[in-house]
Length: 109
Image (cartoon, helix red, strand yellow):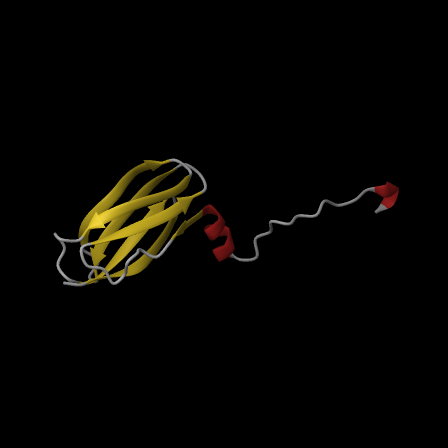
């Protein structure tokens, strides 16, 4: 560049929409899964957000709401006691602001 100017090097670039979302929010797979007795959900949010974490059956009916509140940035964990939920295949969904992710949960006897 003229006059000895230089351009800054940006090392933390976003190469896709998935990268952008993952840098702001992500949900790990619950563990254990398949599960009997209990399972633990963990997620990370980069900014304070209203967070909802719900369990739904495969028809989309709400089974249980685990979180429905504002959360601070950082890592969060919540354990779910499965004794009151019948064995089967379910979906769990997290929403943080306008971002969301949905994954499968298998509950055993």
